[in-house]
Length: 450
Figure 1 (cartoon, rainbow, N blue to C red):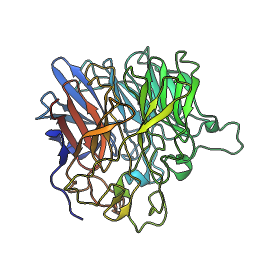
Figure 2 (figure 1 turned 135 degrees about the horizontal axis):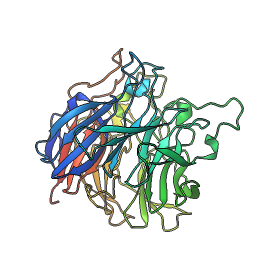
Figure 3 (figure 1 turned 90 degrees about the vertical axis):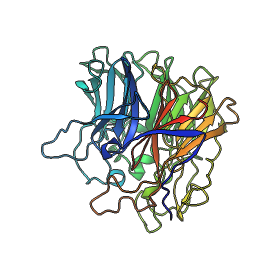
């Protein structure tokens, strides 16, 4: 094993960096305020958000780490703030619990689950909490979709249901959010099953049952990454009565096993009759050949994960038409000949987050490229002008991290090789690309020629 101290890149320039106060980022969101660009970075492990002024991308100014609310006296761990969306001067944040296996926290720590609504129009550097919407009955909220307007489409827990379902929340009055509709897979309803209870989030049982992982709404169609169901389309013109339109089953054959969400992300490609769908890999650092039990035990067999394009001419019959090529393994990569085996350890390699923000002026408008954080393969950019033949056109793999920014008490949370792992990506209207990482910070990039 040899640590890389330099990035590996193709057709990408490294412009700037911020260490995010030593708190690794997760989902990001942006807003323009007067003549400034602000980036808000949620956290994978910690309770809070980094606020970064990226008006000058070569010299980002970290405004501050804004610690999230705590809800239980004397307890300052076990609360997560993984996801964030911004539109119409509102910052919406996700809140939920943590997992011993992923975050290294103690089992059984109490947490508050739901979304919070903040005013960032008045003062972008000092968000003001307006209201909360609680999601009881499970892990809280991991993801959601808000693109401005009246409704938030929440991927949230709900009492009487197993794991995450779709909950549509009306924020016409931001101080008083109200749920107006919901949709779920049949298997998720618990109240007609004797002795049933919600499976622990992240457990093998939960990962093998249907749950909504992510959704995107465009023109009253809700595109859902529905784990263990597939690519699901819903008509949400009537917010009180979402209706199923179609479903493309994806797992099996793709996803599952020791990986993350069996269906992870979806994104309609502008006004084209196509959408992107992904199944999730997992962070290679959780795996080693010595583990014999648990979520991250030694892998003997593992289904492939994929990034693909779905044809949606007929929303009742979505069809997979192509799968993206395997990421190029660059000269200078020091951990093996491919990304599935890292320093001799088999890992559930696959995509993670894609650039799926749209509709706000601050983001780049693009329907012929896909930007994907591919975990240990770094950022990958694809040309999808021809949806039947996606082509990789650029990549950026950050340097391997030199230290751990979080661990567990026994210092065995991350037994795998210390490789660079990318998490989320945004692209602003100036063409600057923002990538955050698992154990490092924020990289600001730009495609050559853009």
